[in-house]
Length: 356
Image (cartoon, rainbow, N blue to C red):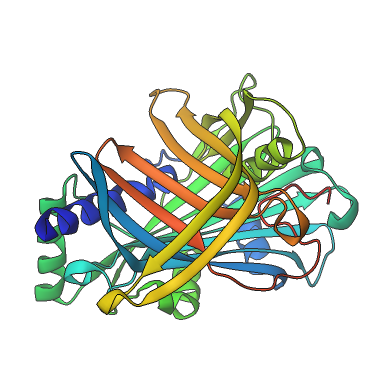
């Protein structure tokens, strides 16, 4: 069972960031909007809210689930630029922790989405987003299976070089562009090293002469919000009582997608209990009055679908806050991110629309 669990963890970490995996770029000489997007990302946000998560990996064994808690984690942050009150930040970072994950697997991804509103964020709405930029940074993997990922890890260790990928995109109503660059590093950055790794990748993007992918189809999605802000808007609608199905189009890597809330179901209570080594309780909590919100993201051209579920709070300081995030790529494996108990700032809502 242990070997199966290790193999499954490697597989799901390949799939966990599939929404953020960039496609190959096509030539374009228009780098100026990319340079402007880079400036936006480099703004200093004042993080008004941060929520931390612990990662659990589970394998279905016939009639029950077995798994391991605390194999990784991450955070969700939300803030406003210290330089311009119209500039909103949504940031996520999730992945495995090589100090805890089986076979020291190091796979993680981070994303920063910056949204320009036509009014200060405190009084704005998601529909007021006029332009956005997304900076993604991940530990790359070309492997299509757990075995291929393990081979990659062994090759990296032997050669002393580690592959990362960065993407910078910009979306407006009239156009969308993106730039994807690789980074081969002698440092195997993990999710705890993000503050050191981020400026390295930003510099690589700034110096890049690689081709830019462009989308200027007049019939494409006209929204300027990207993936994170679209999740925010739909989750906000669900918490505010709008019935499923709910759908919004969005553009990522200069390609059109549709994010749909397929199901919204009330949940009276949710008990969370995570264990560490020697069965020590790492986290024990019970939440009441939640919503189960089932999402699916569909790529317009390929039809590829990615499913995930968010269990959201509906009351008090946890209203609109993801309590639990579940990603199940197939019937036998699941990764779960659980909120660490904390005391958030009053009335702060993470991954909810800017209107609040």
